[in-house]
Image (cartoon, rainbow, N blue to C red; front, side, top):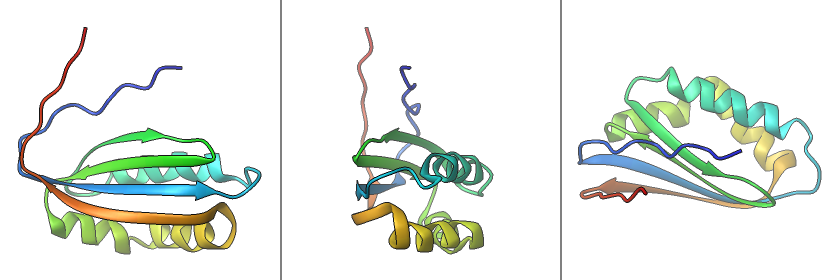
Length: 108
């Protein structure tokens, strides 16, 4: 199934880039990933998400400002998912927070 890309937003805004290497097996990862996307959409300042997952994955979430990014990081259900990720889903991960100053796109 082809996933739609997040729309363009009005810069500046922030992107949180989460890259990861997964452990073997699912262990309810798919359900938690879906829940985190649903929960993120409910957060103040949330703009959108792009994601590609397999054994190695990348998820980029987009936020209006740094306060929104910080609030998302501290949201209690998200914190529980972070804990579970370290315990059972990820061999390694990196989080990068970036300010988007410019954007453009292409579509056929």
